[in-house]
Image (cartoon, rainbow, N blue to C red; front, side):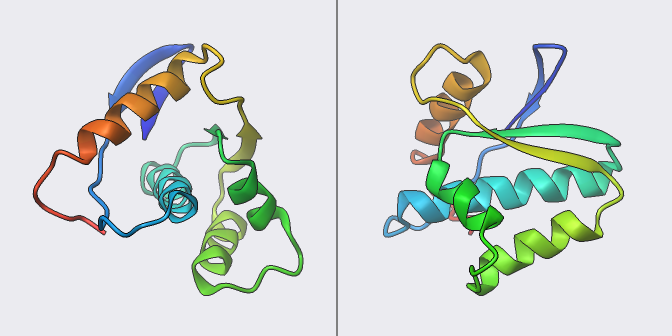
Length: 115
């Protein structure tokens, strides 16, 4: 997860997931953690970008009933923050997305599994 303000990276967090974790789940974990970050820091307005259209569509879907996705939806509803979720094209030069991909690869080198 990359935290940027006015196009400048402020900080980042990396988490190691189980080797059997699918990309979709990894994207959902990143979105969940970004939402939780905003809630913990009481950020008033935030844009969360993801290159996973399927993750964003799942969060938007009224029919979606998987618990981990419902938890994200409930967190979004419960926050006092104005949170917008945006899709960004993968490998299209978006600096934040490129940095997130870089740190995601670095996370695979960690020994400790966080989630």
